[in-house]
Amino acid sequence: LERPQGVCIVSDDVIAVSCWGGGRGRSCIVLFGAGVDGGAALRSFGPAGEGAEQLSNPQQLCVSSDGKHLLVADSGMDRVSVFEVSSGTFVRHIGGEGGVLKGPFGVFVRPGGGIVVSSWGSHTVVVFGDSEGGDVVLKSFGEKGSGDGQFQWPRHMCVVGGRLFVADHANRRVQVFE
Image 1 (cartoon, rainbow, N blue to C red):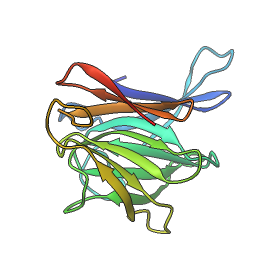
Image 2 (image 1 turned 180 degrees about the vertical axis):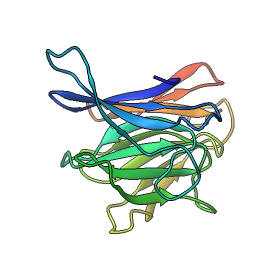
Image 3 (image 1 turned 90 degrees about the horizontal axis):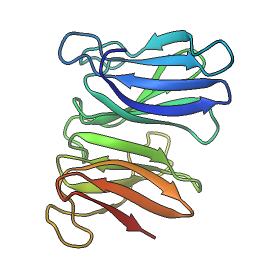
Image 4 (image 1 turned 45 degrees about the horizontal axis):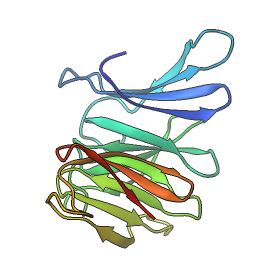
């Protein structure tokens, strides 16, 4: 693996790992068997580059609620890329050039629908709706700072018991939101 950045469980027997190539053209997603076979690589997709199907600096990843799509926060391209889990086929982008995301690091699918993304460069967390294109912003919160609800380089996130946990990198803390 070339500089693994994120990992997620895809199914009972498959995990996904995002890898950053460090500018050497090796950024990709690798799917591994998580079963008795000891974690053999099954396939990889999303090669390095700036094209629609390519990844620049993949970070956190997650699986859609129906288990059919893998969402990848690509901080190098200011977008979240969506791929089919079964084939690795590119589906669409969320965010992108000129959008609200500036260096996204964290991504997850909300249990009730929608996508939440931490935007490292804009010091915010952005909530997208479930539109066909996926780019409808429902809410954005945070700003640069060290007070409650402010961030300095928010990174990875998770939800536990309905609460959102955000790793607030430069403030050296984890913030919790209801």
